[in-house]
Length: 391
Image 1 (tube, rainbow, N blue to C red):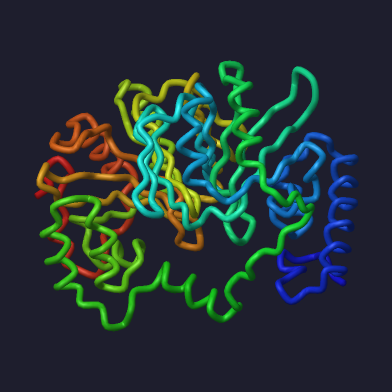
Image 2: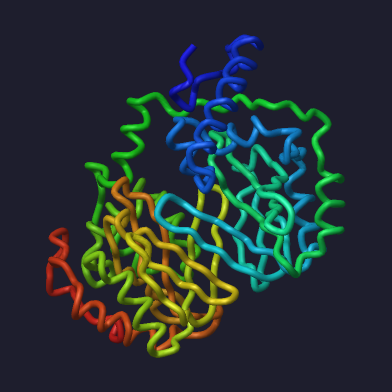
């Protein structure tokens, strides 16, 4: 049987086929590690045409422990570990935040952590969990890693030198799955035609879009959290909405604007908010950024409690987006990949009930003057106005 695709085994595969697949996969992964011991698991999975979760499954019983699926309860106990490093990523962005999980609340399948580690958790996407040991001796790293139904990582929690390791290992034992099988069977991705239709919706507006009604609904927004519901009403994804709405509300900038925004924020010591999401998690840094460094395609923030690694080669579109609220206009810089998936957002630091920072608006006005692309064609160009003069 082939082992070249992520869907090499399915619910209809025989037990013998599944065992054979994972036995072969373990051998192939070991061969890759023999060639390059520093190869990251995400890169190994890509080379082997499988998922990270499938690779970890081959190591169950050998530095990897399967966790049971009571993820909500597990997350309520992470605070007891003390300081850890929380990692959320997508293909273009890696967001690493060090601190303690605090003020965690759960509302149905939604979780909120509102401490230094600031998270929006979508537990319906959490399907597999593992405790992972990597390396040996003083160089050993221990982590809790969570994956969706397709085996893609949604969130990882790494122990650090300040973590209570006795509490960490006790937590692993409490949530150790009864069955420690060395294989998993993933859900298949959408059929090719359905996936193409879904991807197209990320970039194209529906033919029946009523732009006048969209502008009316947009102008009447009271809270940024109502924005997604408004898009759903119009059967719109973000990029098609931004192309249609007009440059007073959404203006496309060239891709350099992302890096320039971080450089300007660091230079002015302006506190900002950096959002990065996976399918099951949004992770947020609030505060200044200080130490910036480019290494090849990666533009990095390397501060003591916050690291951001941005592969700017994977950025395809950057939009300056303004939304009316009861606190005044709230402005964001939003980054997308070539498929139209949002990979990061930047805001000025703000709290509910407080207006947007004037320094953030000044920064965005500079970006607008330097990086603006052609004005949207969907509405009259006369609608354009500066951020600071937002309605």
